[in-house]
Length: 197
Image (cartoon, rainbow, N blue to C red; front, side):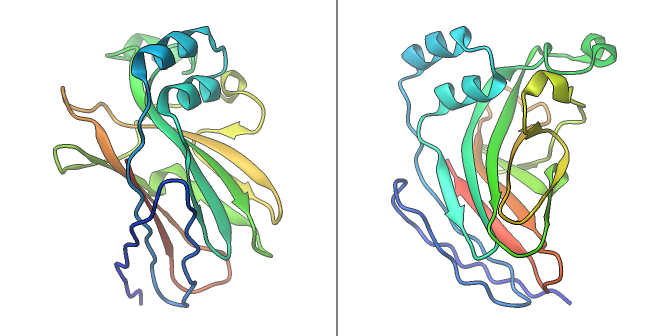
């Protein structure tokens, strides 16, 4: 049985939240405002070779949520060229060479492994609709060391970087909110991490 508490805390983007962990509940923390000078960022991003660098340059300040089990940082959500990141057999089937992608840095601060799965990430568009991860397989060899695209088990005291491409969004729709749900192993309930852009 799962109960859900929708407790949304509004905080300054330079602060971090420390939600209390309650057994059998889902938690959420809401963040606001990411701003960046897009002309300067686009020029710098095209010079960066790593997809992580491209996303970081395009999005400005990262947003961090800390709980007793995990420190999750949404490095950013940006339009990224993905035709060089997918496996060769998928390149012909890509409708657009760019896709909105979210980049997370995750640190396990608990005593047990945490399983981060991209399918547990939801994207809320500016049109109010919910979108899921794209049905694309990114080639890990093209993402860089320590970067994963689908799922990763993060050992206690360790970190991982996860990139999640979003399904094709309709024209003029942007991601306004990113929500990820984790289920810490050996504990009841879920933790809901919500990042508002």
